Image (spheres, rainbow, N blue to C red):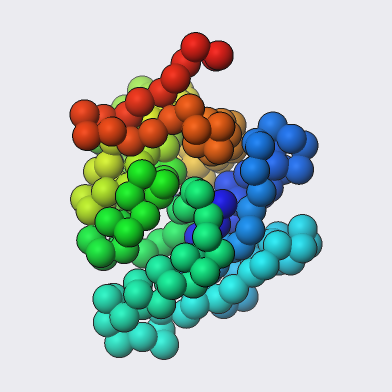
Length: 201
Ligand code: GRF
């Protein structure tokens, strides 16, 4: 798989750990960041994984950027493309090229709170539960078919940081699990939604 990041890369780390322990029958063949100097790139280097920066600031249009990004991914020939905190909106052409093998993790119980600042929005709304969602990516921002979600409780003394920490623990459990299913070819995107062969669960 190829993993796209923009920052810390804790989800990348969870996936690398799951490949190295054999829980995921696959390997990360490349990590691409749209930002230089982020910690996720160090994580890749530490595990001898090909790491590359394609800085969006060097491209005039989203289309140009996405074309270069798509060719760099295609050169690595992955079966799965994992968005792990990749803070970019992708063009429809990009999404189409990788449709069915492109997944994202979003820190909310989709369809609630698409977009940014999800933890604060859940607090402001007085929600009693919050969580994260792994979904196939389509051309709608955070709008593709949901594969798996995890819920956490919201406590009275939570702030956005404490809530984010609780959600992160769940992200690191469910994202490697979905990647495992994809690598095992037990999960796929169909015209009528998500198909999961759960006979072995
Ligand atoms: C996660 O909260 C994820 O849900 C969101 O971006 C964050 C990335 O965190 N898409 P990390 O870089 O994996 O630590």
